[in-house]
Length: 95
Image (cartoon, rainbow, N blue to C red; front, side, top):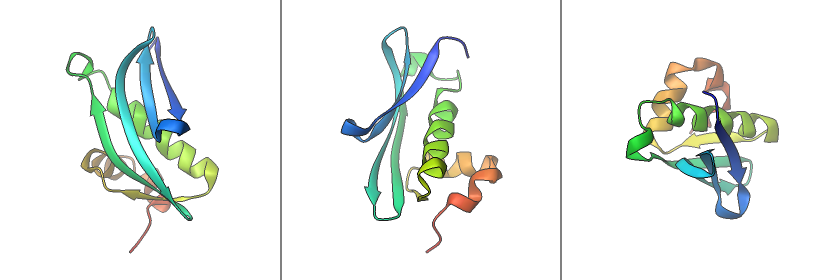
């Protein structure tokens, strides 16, 4: 997807998807010792159907892997995305 950039904004505890400076979607999180909790994914109505949520999940999970933390997918979108992309299952924190 050309022109869409996903960046982490740690001071806001979220990942943002932007295109040409316009906010298309966010994935919010909060950190706990040794883990990161992904609690909400939202995409602007006009940007839905373009894979923005998937881009946010991929970036957030890659960031968790890089940081060496477990993931707690409280957000149902993130949970479903991980189920569809099982290579990320080892990151999921088991209760």
